[in-house]
Length: 341
Image 1 (cartoon, rainbow, N blue to C red):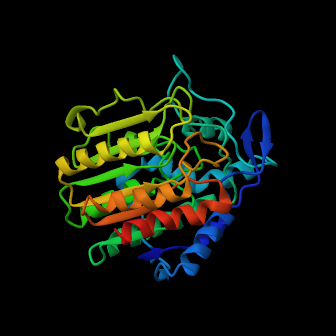
Image 2: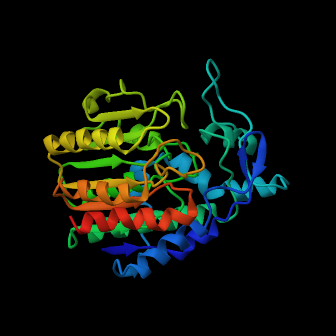
Image 3: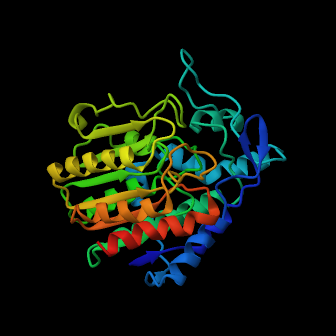
């Protein structure tokens, strides 16, 4: 399987994440990619190539242009304001408050942030833009390949129309889906198998019927991002019926998780898409430090084979997974399971 990857992800190397009232070293770090690449090479998965530079056209079809400008300029504004640490939001337009973007950088951060754990650093925009290049290159290759792996970092599925958080800034899976539509696909399905709900992807496609979005995740009562991901969220307007959530409780083992996967694949089959995008997070693993599902490494191979049964051109887009010593094993197990089905 062809892998698309950019070394420019290393330009984002945050030193702080807010967790439990403390600033800690982030779970989402550059070394995640090293473990995956090492496993790709040791298993002989296939060629690894760098993406071309893609412009802003597809990004601006998916994300609000004011939000994109914010991402491009936030670090410079933060530094110009004399701030010493990494940029972290401290206030939000909560219920019954005005939804207007301030000019002050502290206010801008809160306006565009959906969570406080994700700091913005020098190099964040460059890394996020490079990650979109990876996704868009992979989408362009899917016309010649039956499956492609976009090894994206930073991840993207929490990035909404105009909000960042959950380590995500630009939504790689959404951009890949839009690119496939622009290349001629009539319908695309996105299946998010990351432990956390793909709230950003849901937000982007919630009123559209040309992209079916399905997410299997920890129930929002107990898991980040908390405020989306309930099973009664099924889409609006033209998108009614084209959004499906399978929210599962703490301690869920592979059996019930796989049942949700099979239901998802049945829905995808009935939708009849021209291509399938998988938001691939391996934080469903039993040892993941910020998740609560109980999948084993062998389970990833099995569900990779299940995904192949959709019999669709398939683009895998890397999302989460924070048990770094096993992230390469689990990620490549999915891809090999798919290939060997």
